[in-house]
Length: 498
Image 1 (cartoon, rainbow, N blue to C red):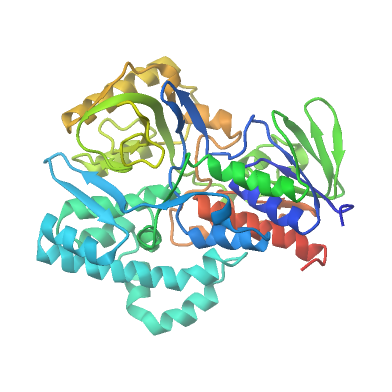
Image 2: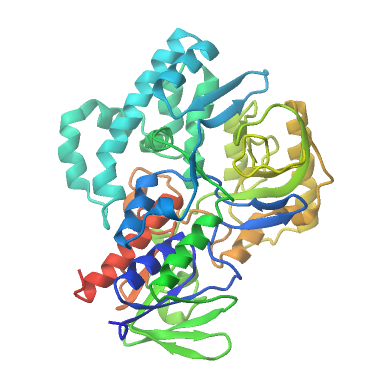
């Protein structure tokens, strides 16, 4: 079947998942990647203490990857050293309080009781039950389905009307739901933060996103050697099955004739012909004509706007002092609503929530023998505007003067001299992921029907298929992997190979 050819543009997790699946099924796969490495948003920065993950730092929904590997005749545990994370995250507030959450309901109940009292532990139990019910309700018809289906949700929802009523009607916005559920504002902040995991503001995102807490609470895994080991492993399995990878290769245009794909043209002018092209990138690139004017109408506007959040991301090594860090740490601000209002206005937040990933402390599975740690700090940001191109040095100075004094105020001192190359800005994310406007998650999750508006894997152009975190079922590493599975199965089905 190697006469069946497929070209995959982009080696993000969605493209890699599709490459594994298609090559294992006997398709001749060629992956074209403009960067020098696989992984897409799973990227690294080099520091004096070694590589630091500068994108996603943990794995959730382990079963999605386990299933993919098994489908390709492989056992994931033979390829990756996955380490369950006991502490999901350590949370800090301006009043000096701190709360650890775990992959254990009983431990979380006890921790919240000690942190905020018996009433808060009861409120947490109620919210935890809601989150689980929502996940169970939406998992099969949305996450695992190649096309989101409303009917199974409604049918199953009749058996749990309070869940649908609370999450869809009574309190349709995530922050409103949590503000009603929790009497302690700190817990409202904590659990509403999960909207940012898929690029949304908690003030505008639907309360359905409460289910993300259930995803996290089911288990979080680190990968020995860093998250960047995952795409390397996926590439190796695809290569083993015959896939060919071309790095530092730029696709100039997807070739289309009579609304049918016929291959690609590289920036060198070389044409590579194939009846199947899988685009693993932000569909905004297609809409913007970056890969040819004939693709501009292949994506509906509703599948692209409004845009999701971007970020300012610091990646560096430093010697920490003060606060004892877990792997995941969240330093909350004093005015959560102001942060997201400023982002909505297109501004860098003046007092942001700071996510700090400590990748080199003594509890890390790949510790550094010195006291120097490897760190990633993420600040939520607005996508870029086409009106004004920001000046990097000005952004760097402003972000530096916000980030490090805030952490020091909250008890964490990092001994380093910040440099512009340590910071990735929304504008630079747009350059890394062309056409995205810096949005890291494609279309935003705002609006109760947003999940039904994301582009699906199949496009109106015959032979053009899509995968990635901007495609259904949505943002995040497991969802991108799932989209790659959907795209591959769409192709195999069209070829009558399923």
